[in-house]
Length: 180
Image 1 (cartoon, rainbow, N blue to C red):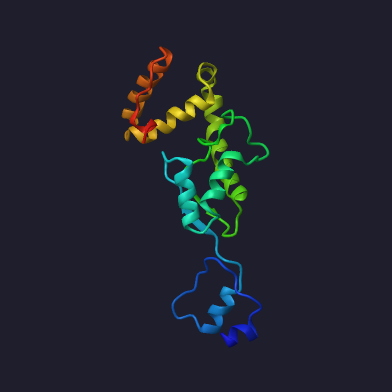
Image 2: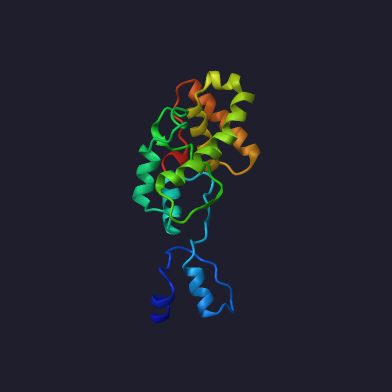
């Protein structure tokens, strides 16, 4: 502790990589540097609360701050796709991200939204006619349900057909994933 006080202005909180065999003086110097970025995987088919749990468990903001931001933050250029009824629910793309350790909730949400748009926009152009029949919000909700309800691509196609047929006639979806 005395060496640190005399030779290091301050240690920086967050993850640092220190290899086996590193001398104490070198390890302290590493701890005084900016922390390493955090790699985190957000799995498919999960709700925003689960994303907030995962992100907060690795020290990225708090669960409550993340949930609040996912529901109410205004991020320039990302309003309106899913009509904002549930904040950004459905637009937080599941993937592996590398994020700075001291990122705010708003800084965390931007790459998730950007990734969603990078994946969604080309598909929206390709399937424009389908988007004239169904809203982007409806499509994303069905896709989320499919991720939770069916595993194989063939099963997802079958379940999607059933769900869209039910929507067409005004029937309840009655999908387990809607209540779990």
